[in-house]
Each structure stands twice: as C-alpha cells, then as structure tokens.
Image: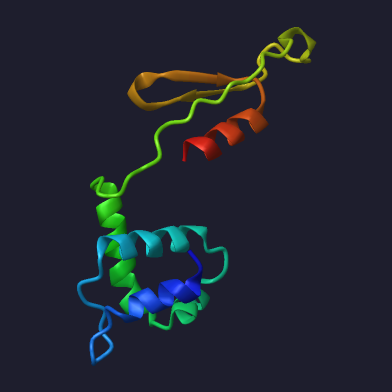
Length: 123
C-alpha cells in the first residue's frame, strides 16, 4: 500500500488533539508492512505519514505485538528446490555452510548465496 492512502486511513483514527486512537488491526498490519519495507530514515517515514515519532511508535509497537501473538496471517513456509552441484569440483573438502534451524534441524548449504536466498524466502 502506498503511503498516501495509508496516511488517509490513519488520519481517520486521529482525535481532535492529534492522538491516534482505536486504530484497526488491518491498518496496524499495513503500517507494519510499510515500516518493514521502508529503506530510508525513520524520520522520513513518520513525516510521509504526517505523524510524529511518538504517535507512530505506539502504533508500530502495537502492530509488532499483534504480529508476535499471531493475529496477522503469516505466509506459510515455501519450499525452494535447489539442484545439486558437483561437490568434487570444490577446492576444499570443508566448503559450505551449516545452519542449526528450529527444533535442532541441520541445514547444509554448499554455497553462501544459496543460504542467503533461503533466508530471504524463509523470512
């Protein structure tokens, strides 16, 4: 969602004194997603929405809490298929990365690029 429409949606929850009250869960989710995708300084994000850092801190905090508690639908785990490569062609016998995942699962990656791609898709 673009910041202009998000700003309009947030302004409907603004009180006469400028406080953000009773912000809906769907708006909290959109604010959190926009915040996570924002690449610039936080100050610019707040300014683009038209609210102060104090006002947005409480909104983002509530959204993070709801996300931790599982109120927002999270995309399920997506399996990625990696074609095996010939490990004999590598120069050292100990090449690769090993990650201990949740519940003690061990994931092995022959290349760091593959690990980075896996982590991006798992996040």
